[in-house]
Length: 91
Image 1: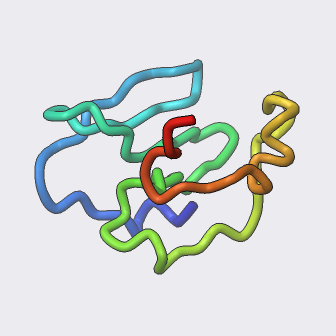
Image 2: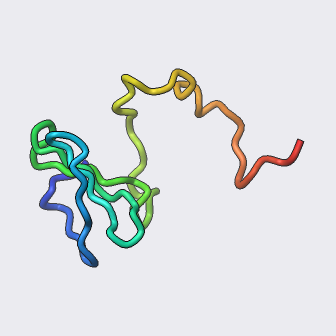
């Protein structure tokens, strides 16, 4: 999350979906990709940028897990599962 005044859209105009009374989800009007989340009641003055939209996501590494109250129990250990660069080999 960053201060809203630190974000400038340089191309196009995001569409906005009212996902709750105060929550607003901003997305690309052309492809539908989620871009930002704002909530003036809970997070006044801040904008939550979807990390998948960064030009270089490695520049801003994750430092914490948030909103985990309702996460699926198996997500607690998801980082321990096998990893594959693409698809796993056929069995």
